Amino acid sequence: MTAAALEIEDVAVWFGGVHAVDGVSLSIAPGAVVGLIGPNGSGKTTLLDAISGQTSPTRGTVRLDGQDVTGRLPEARAKLGVVRSFQDCRLFPELSVEEVLLVSEDVRRRVGVLSTTLHTPWARRAERAKRAAVADVIGAFGLDRYRNHRIQELSTGTRRVVDLAAIVLASPRLLLLDEPTAGIAQREAEAFVPLLRRIHDVTGATIVLVEHDVPMVFALSTQVVVMETGKVASSGTPEAVMKDPAAVAAYLGASPEALARSGRLSGDD
Ligand SMILES: Nc1ncnc2c1ncn2[C@@H]1O[C@H](COP(=O)(O)OP(=O)(O)OP(=O)(O)O)[C@@H](O)[C@H]1O
Ligand SMILES: [Mg+2]
Image (cartoon, rainbow, N blue to C red):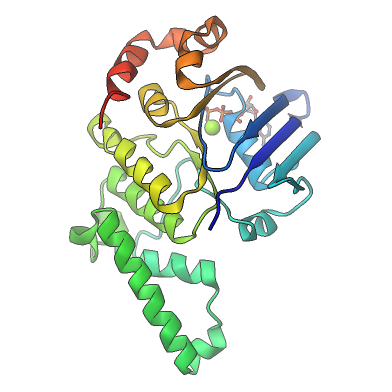
């Protein structure tokens, strides 16, 4: 698995008179971790939608590894390794953690239903490999003690960890994460910094992370992009963006405390 290169050229997404994304160009290197921040309604989720294919842009081009995928369906992009999480994702509440992960593996591999039903040797081997992969992520994400807990019994934070574990099972080459810590208590959210680092290490994927948690974004990202009313207000290394008056005016000025904390956070581990 190699990380994907992503190129966004002059992408605009208009909903009637609303210019949700309005001429965004970004070049994202394989393996980069890009933090996408900005005020509510600045177009972050819509830009992720244009990258994953959930929405088709009014104009502009999305390229994966140099290949134009602008007109491709989400399923076609998923085959190229584009995996995304959704804001407020809901997992199957009745299933156990292990079952949910086994199901997500099934969805990815689309293990031939017929051969599974017939219990052919190939299907048994595939089943064993699947269980081993699920056992691996359960261990890697510290979910052992929740293995047999139903999703509905978990805290929001733990549910998000399960969500991320399921994403890793999909072997992403380009991972699009929309507010993985939304609605989670600060203490739990802090655990996501090492967790997302691990995901980056394990998958090697290029990551675009939308987050309102500014310290987390600055701690994790190799590149930070600040959006404002559908446009890129500032883009660059975390150090450069932190000092950019345009970034401060667009968004960061609203959270000086958060920025101060981010200085400390990025010094960690
Ligand atoms: N399907 C849609 N139809 C019409 N307008 C939309 C649609 N989706 C988004 N918008 C509008 O586009 C703008 C950008 O929305 P978007 O959800 O991309 O912002 P965001 O940066 O993700 O915000 P948040 O931080 O609140 O999640 C907003 O004005 C929103 O109301
Ligand atoms: Mg959003």
